[in-house]
Amino acid sequence: MVSRYSKHPELAYYFAQWLTGPTKGDELIANPKGFWDPLRASNLTNPAILKKFGKPLVETTMANTKYLVANLLIEGNQEYFNVLDKNLTQVMQGNLSAEEAAKRIENGWNKITEDIGRDRQKEVWRKGVEMGAYIDKF
Image (tube, rainbow, N blue to C red; front, side, top):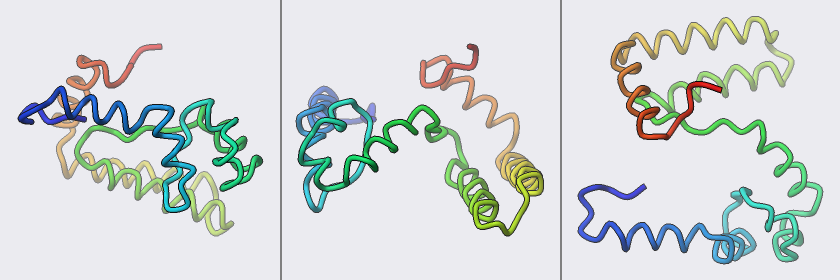
């Protein structure tokens, strides 16, 4: 994202495009001190990425991207995901049933929404849809 108040928004955009493009992106992922951010097919064939992470991990991660959930561009994003993560972890560890986790997630999310304001969240979501950040119809 580039701030509308940026002195050189085009330059910031082009830098972000370069940094996250396939050539530089693969280079950064493959770097020993780099990050892991699989998002393109080139990750599956880049020898340096495969060497660093192993082919099974890269293939599995890329296959799972179809189940990826993007960050919500609404207030409380971190809080919503914390509730989700904590409860899913408890299910995966066998400490909580999926049904109980679902109830806790629903209650936690409703509390966050009420704290922020349900109407405010709807307004922010609608703006995101209008800007093309989200699709709310399939």
